[in-house]
Image 1 (cartoon, helix red, strand yellow):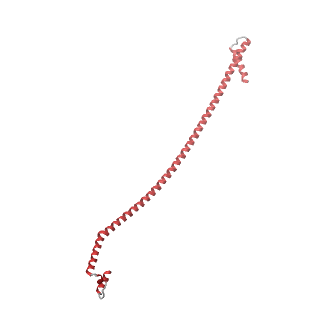
Image 2 (cartoon, rainbow, N blue to C red):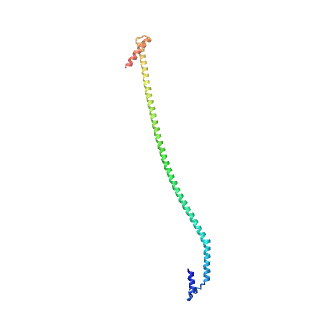
Image 3 (cartoon, helix red, strand yellow):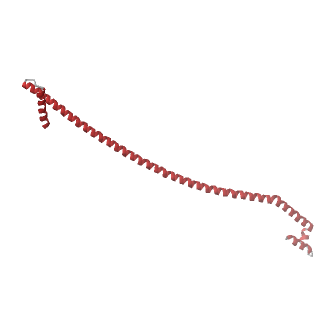
Amino acid sequence: MTLPLFLAAAQGAAQPGIVETFGLETKYIIMQVVSFLIVLGVLYKFGIKPVTATMEERNRKIEAGIRHAEEMQAKLAATQAESAAIVKQAHGEAARIVDDARKSAKEFLDKQTQEATAKANDLIAKAQQATQLEHRRMLAEARAEVARLVVTTTERVLARKLTDADRAAYNDAATRELTGV
């Protein structure tokens, strides 16, 4: 745009214009424009274009890194949620196992208590039976001793020897009397 203005100003040279005042020559201006365009082309091809390509590549890598980071963040969140679910499930399972163990322990304790009570009752019953048998045996021994004493006393009182038949009769009579008492 400035070039046509300069050319137009050079042609209308009636008045000393900018071209004469500054000493602008068309051939130098054209050479400078061509040089500028060549430098611009070289800079674009070897400077701006590779820098732009490098920047675009970096932008793609950054975007890929961001996408990858977002994917990893999503995977991490999913893994954390899964871990939390597994931990929650494990806590539930542990609570169930503890409850089952408590129930089993209570049942075992109740069973052992019942067995111990049954054994204790059985021992008490056997002890009572043994006591009753011992009591009967002692009564039988006491009766036999009393009968023997009666016979011995009777022999001394009567001052004679009793026959076995007499002794048996006295023993029976003493036993009947003691049984009635």
